[in-house]
Amino acid sequence: MRSNILGRLQDGERLGDIANTLGVTYGTVHAIAIESGIRYSGKHLTAAEKAEVNRQRIIDGRSIRQIAAAMGLPKSKIGRCVQSQFSRVVDTGGTHVSPRNLRRPKRCPEHGLVRLWPCVACEGEKRRKLFLLQRGRKA
Image 1 (tube, helix red, strand yellow):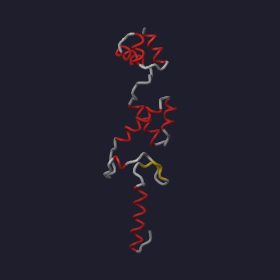
Image 2 (cartoon, helix red, strand yellow; image 1 turned 90 degrees about the vertical axis):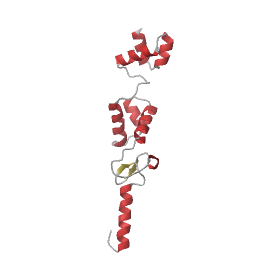
Image 3 (cartoon, rainbow, N blue to C red; image 1 turned 180 degrees about the vertical axis):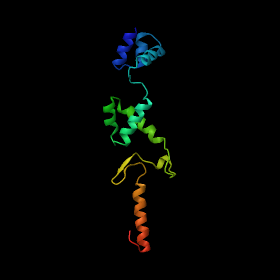
Image 4 (cartoon, rainbow, N blue to C red; image 1 turned 45 degrees about the vertical axis):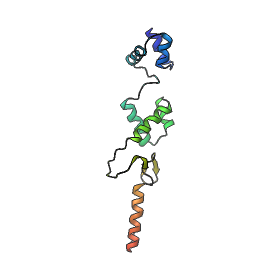
């Protein structure tokens, strides 16, 4: 029975379908899946996997499809992970921005990936130059 369940998990069947087909409880199939350590489609991402997705998305600037292909996971799972990270806004710079004003990361030509568009640093530089021109000083 155990080897049959493991074989079906490796073939990509869902836990509920396996339980219904074999006439066992969902909990039994789930326990066997956890004990075996097999990666099955319904398994949640671990903290290390979420960190890897975050690193590839933000630091490397890779697309969701590229990350999914590299990790061997469905793109929808990676997309949900990215969306959940995006919605949890941690304000470390002292700027008070509501999540609805934030956008998906875009690449600023000077400052790399930014989430607030237009780039705050570029806009600040433009305003500084305008202020200095109004005062009659060189920018």
